[in-house]
Length: 209
Image 1 (cartoon, helix red, strand yellow):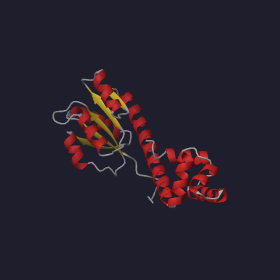
Image 2: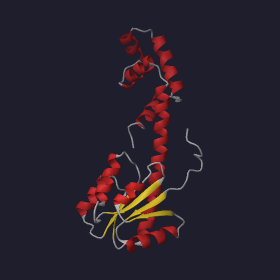
Image 3: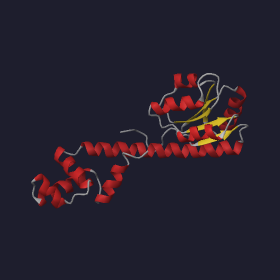
Image 4: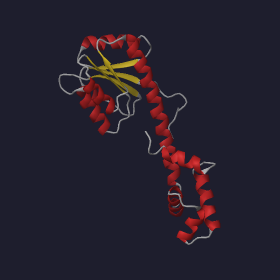
């Protein structure tokens, strides 16, 4: 179980841009608001040091000398990273913005950067980060509880999720209705739920981001 969940460390804001003036501006702005900031002049430099276990959000330029922000985003997605990403560009256009947002960026900001806009976007990214952490913990808990089910309980649960009634399950598995109800009650206890709809909602977290 993770420790210190009541007071998790605040996320670092990673800034990736090959324009030093932009890095200086954003670093000064965000640091003045008490955010911890780390700056990188290339996507490669960021990836070389990026620790996916470190709570963070990412602000990246789209157009850079070597690896682009969109390429960086694709690599992070391929690695299964759920870091919230804000894309920015002086060459922003609708197709690029659509690509970034479709790939999972939470915002696309055109340069020159407006201070209020980037602050609001950072707040949204932080909210997104908190949401991701909550969903991740919920998935871990539900997954661990599923592992506690016996093979028979999993079989019955799958049939119930398919819409079969307890009576139909009993007939198909050649069990008594009382036995199926006992298994159903055990499933509910092990999954820590009070109703079948609640169980279904919990299981849906495993398929949702």
